[in-house]
Amino acid sequence: MTNNMILSADTAVVESELPALAEKINDAIESAEEHARSACQTALRAGELLNQAKAHVQHGGWDDWLTANCRVKPRTARAYMQLASKLQALPHEERQRVADLPVREAIRAISTKPESAPRCNDYRAQSRDEAQRAAGDLRRSGAALHKAAKSVRLGSLKGNELAKLKVRLQKTLEMIAAMEAAR
Image: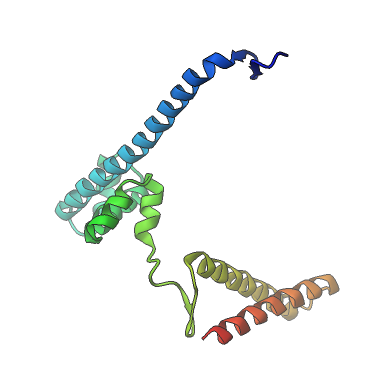
């Protein structure tokens, strides 16, 4: 192989062709990003229209009307409707930022409030990621405790399971102590 060749799966690309290839790559990426923004704008429009329709459907008949008349799952419709409703309540800069996100990220962005992180007593997480990790740890610990309590009731907790449970409980206690210290 010579210095001026880069091998791909089944063809060789001459180095002089790389700038043109890079331009095509950049164009494709730009197009993908534009389509993502366009998808969010379209989802917002669908949400606005769904909200309008729901206002005219008899109480209790929304899911039936939606299923009979639209090619969208009720869960997706609710997400679009919530996106359209909540987006209007955001400050202009935040509204524009969310509107430029891909649809799923926009829905996630309006579904959470970074300024009100989950709390444990008076503990406040330093970041949303930290709060999500702590909540996950507590959920897993709670599930382990539930499983252990059930096993103890049934008398089927084995030595290895007991050791794993002890480690998980110790980690949970350490996390709770750290939360207490942070308050």
